[in-house]
Amino acid sequence: MSDNTVSGVIPMGYLIEGNTFYSYEKKSLISIGSSRKGIRLRSTQSNVLEYLLEHAIESFVTDEELMLNVWEKNDLRASTQRVWQVINSLRLKIQELGISDHFILRVSKKGFYIRESSIRTIYCSPAQNHQHVEV
Image (tube, rainbow, N blue to C red; front, top):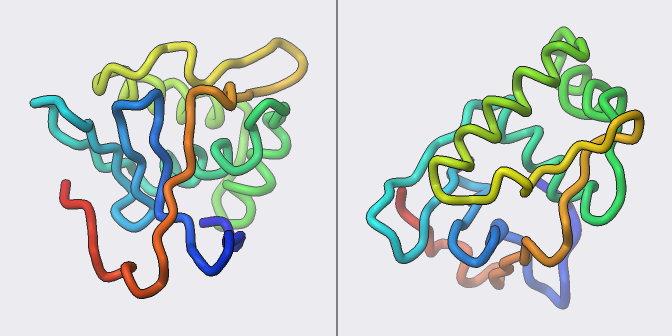
């Protein structure tokens, strides 16, 4: 999770395309206003999604950057094939909740990015941090 705070509040997750919440604490995607259930992400999937949400908003994140900051920082073996596999499995999971297949975009020879208009950071004050979204 990002260390950035805004006016004494801490980020608790992201609202994606207005209908899905990603929870840092639960490492889950939670559908809002739908009968669809939440989806808990695997560790590497959540690390990739968090890294993209924190660094790929209207800017590119390369495969090499993901391998260094997600795989190597977690003592995992990195490869471009593994990045591709995790991104594809992540895309399939987010599509199950109705998120556009264009949410995580890839531009050849540049990297991945996310349109700023498709996400909103959700904050809570430290005093409210005890309240949790259930999956």
